[in-house]
Length: 177
Image (cartoon, rainbow, N blue to C red; front, side, top):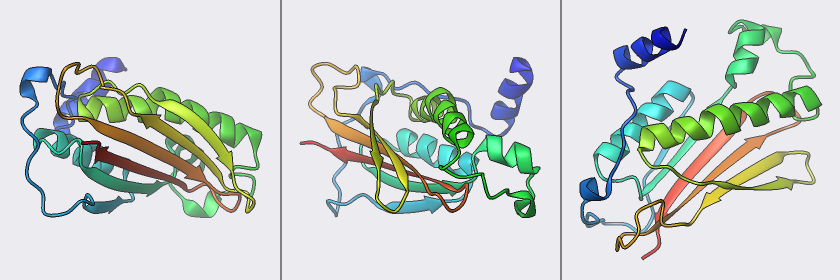
């Protein structure tokens, strides 16, 4: 199974990259203080975008949003939105448990792989009065690049609602200096 996954990733040109201190160039000159916003509804396109931004030396200046059904939901409904059950939302302990597993074991790992940097995310949880659940992951460390004059912070917000199984991932990477 592992070999088939790696072959499929190579075919999609999603082989993970690894950024080293030597490969980080000087920060490019930018016209705006706000990173360009990109929106995706497919996890693979989101991963491809992150990989492309790393290759373009823009890993510290991006804002991307992903609205999608997590894989455990897509597997259960067999990619047919008509089969979505009313219990498939953040009111279900099973949904929250599966989402937590997906985010911690797969999504954040894929973000690290595609960007090529080992982020050490710290999680904060927030439950809003309207029932939405938000997990905010932050990394404001030096990301393993000590002594580098190029510093940035990364935030990944994972949001789910009590209305449907759609998960919203909002990733921001902002220069600190």
